[in-house]
Amino acid sequence: MSLPYSNSTSGRSAMDDIRKTIQAFGCSKFAPMEDFAEGKVIIQFEYRGRMVQVEASAKGYASAWLKENPYSNRMRMTRVEHERRALEKGQIAVWSILRDWIKGQLTAIETGILSFDAAFLGQILLPTGETIYERTTSQGLLPAPEKDAKP
Image (cartoon, rainbow, N blue to C red):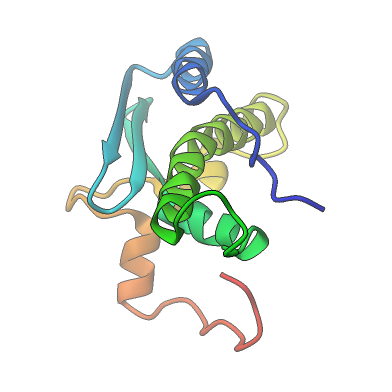
């Protein structure tokens, strides 16, 4: 099985789809951002006074892509070019991943499967600027993950 989203080509249009989806859902604010130094895509939006921040790592995706597509001396590019290609794929794929995840969460809310808070609990921003997930992690409120479990 190939890595999902490895053939994505719609980074910019996926961002536009996210904007349209959350706007149709009734969100009042939307702010996409790319952190080039950290290799992250960050989306913030507001729904009924609740600020939400969702992040995805293009570097993390690139790392997964490189595991599936390791560099070989037979390639017609250098290792650095291959790694740059992986990051470019990651920068496109994360937009599509976020689009599909947000659309899935909002659909679950609309159909009564989840409440808004349940769907986005970890991503709700606290007045301090950190997410609920970041706060619970920093305070050790979650059990430690199993050693063999993937994050």
